[in-house]
Image 1 (cartoon, rainbow, N blue to C red):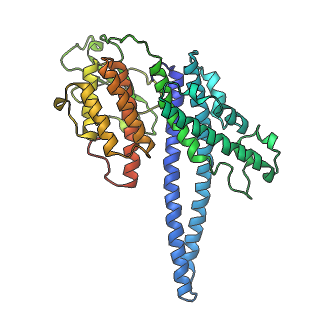
Image 2: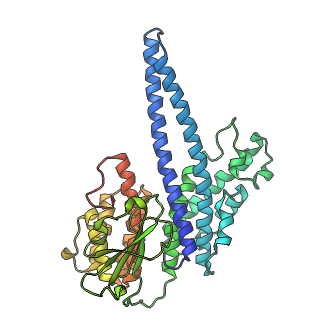
Image 3: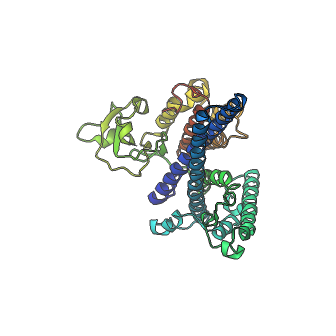
Length: 409
């Protein structure tokens, strides 16, 4: 996201990976709990049908189910704490971008890394969504406003119910929800967990839209050595330790390697060496460059826009949609067709990830139709990351769901 400082980018990337991992782990834990409940009930019915007997099977399954419930409850608590903090960080950075203020330092961001208070979260959600999401169309702004209003309404219900937990409602405003949790009631975040996680994970895309809205009206031209785009080429929880370079094979010399530098990708130990498909048409070399962030898979592209666009098409867009540049009248036509394909082939109305992919493909088509290929590449980078997430989730639900080579890497 060009326009953020390196610190802001890394903070958002780390929170996004953390919350995304917890969301996936919680879904897995919930599925395990449901399966154990079913098998435990079946064991109990068999025991009753037999008129008693050795209860070993039922007792063991009951014990495992109780442990699974405890684990799921702990995961929910962790997800609430991290997602609430991520939402505060994301909204704070977004408001900074919209206001045109300087980037936030680590010292300014670090106090936001812990779970917010009930009152602090309410105050941040009550900011005018029309202003915060001014870069989006009226429909999206109205949806965001409704989402904020519903969250505030639920948070106020938690405040009102604090008295039943032995806490004065006014005092509850200064406490994080974790401090209101007890053994006698449902967790105070029961009706907030999924909405706050969804809001937090959407904020990077809102920040990107705000940054693109503020871009200069003059089309910026690419020159040799410029960074064409930055994107996460895949999703991995590992910490990046190594940078691998991709060089154009027909330019530059060993004595002047920067002339041929086309791509750098930072990877963790498990992805060293990285897949050759990421460097198609390039010569891979080890690098002395330092990693920019902890994110494995961060790719920095130095190729001219047309070459970078072709890399996008070859690596994920064509495998996902089956569309080829040769069959369309230039990039705007291809990207428009890809957007239409997403609208008909995937459930973008109810699936947030595919909705995000469609939104950024649409932006890329718009920018490319104006001849503004650098922001088009930025939008494609976000679409690629969202596609990898959507396919990973789909593969968890339906094995072999991802098309060959399409972001399943």
